[in-house]
Length: 398
Image 1 (tube, helix red, strand yellow):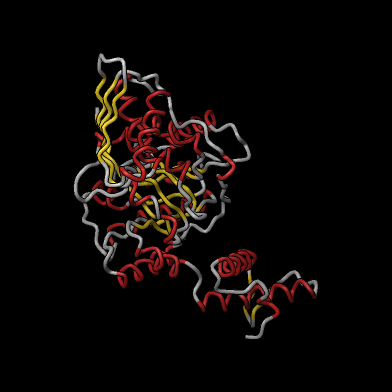
Image 2 (tube, helix red, strand yellow):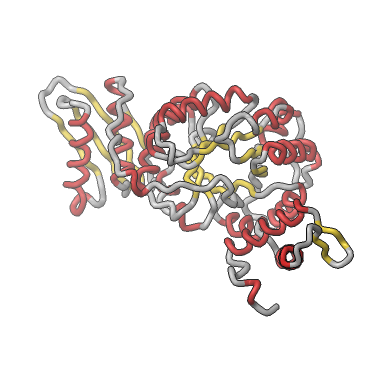
């Protein structure tokens, strides 16, 4: 039974092999460049995992490439669970006090995808400043690696400091995704992404499982369905309004364009209908519309143009497949100078109308409707949150 990754390019990971034997002892073979300094602690951890499953007749080989304890434990647990066909978790008792909640209306400008079986990419994911970190169990994980990625993601949720980013997990398509939920929900992700969603029933199904596992009503776990097919687009409003846990509706254009038989282009004419439909469905349901990822990680100018178009359609954020995209996405989805200036004028006009007891707000010769005022307030709050405007802006000179 094997798990993990091996080879010259592997970093912060390990490869393990377990053989059950008839000998009444446990033998651990450790191959590691840090064996002199950390060999004893690595072997002790391995012994603890094996003992927790009552494995006392086995030979375990570990090829270590700088794996942290949570990675070592995940890889060893994976081979043990293969060997004895168990679903019991070794890593099931943790201190939940460090888990943080996130609000429904969080500004979800950017979310960075991290492959669920690549620990070296997880460890420092929080330093890039993305609004969310997605530990991905779906497309980025090979079919034969699903089980070990699930355990690794669970351990990462319990261990890694993501520096305040919303802790997200993209599960597999149902029904496999239900197995993912059973593993990760006890470790309090903030949000679950449901890929290739095509009906409200799928959302309700994972909502039910989350509710059964997470009994803490003070710790909300949200859902973000991803629309990736023609049928999903048609049922977007039904999906977006299917559960109180849904806070955003995302669009996946790679699969969508394949489904309608079109090539995805930077001009995005082929996906205009889908993008507009998803925005409209999300807004009608009172949730956030999130655009698809931009696949060219080297063209920042094209990314900026795409975001400007996306924002003009009503999207409030998009996914990132590379850390270098995060800063550009955060910058262009947050309010620009013109938006902030206009919002300030609208809010100031509203303040003046309130002081005078007027029921009508006007800016120059134009009447300002309540939804416009609300949007201006949201822009101001967003500008303050992103550091583009001071909380004391009313008292500051232009």
